[in-house]
Amino acid sequence: ATRKQIIARHSYLIMQTPTTAQLRTAIEVLNKLGERINTHANHSVQQLPDSKLGSDYAEKIQSQAVEQTTQIAVAVTELECWRQEVQQQRRQCVSHHV
Image (cartoon, rainbow, N blue to C red; front, side, top):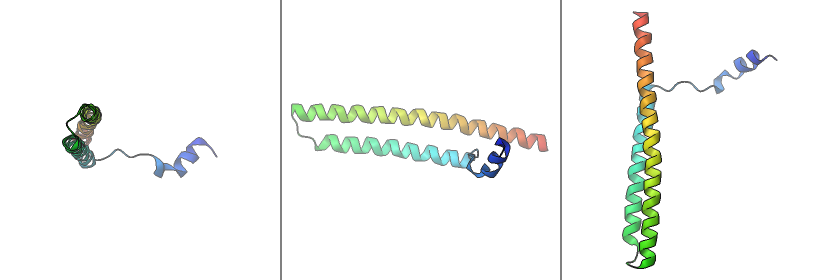
């Protein structure tokens, strides 16, 4: 089988560009995840004893939460850019068809 035949046979496996609504949903989900991470970290820190060890754990928990929410913020920014690109492409497509 040629490469074109293989691709044609398995075209359902090729990722389609998501809609702007799907991208917006992904952004909302990631923002909620960031909120959940912060809430969980704050709750965990409040449960720790007032001691040197508790303080050390609190720093580690907060540091991990910051790292995770920073990574989420980067992903959200990328998705927002992608969403804008898709919107622009759709606008151009509509203007060409009119």
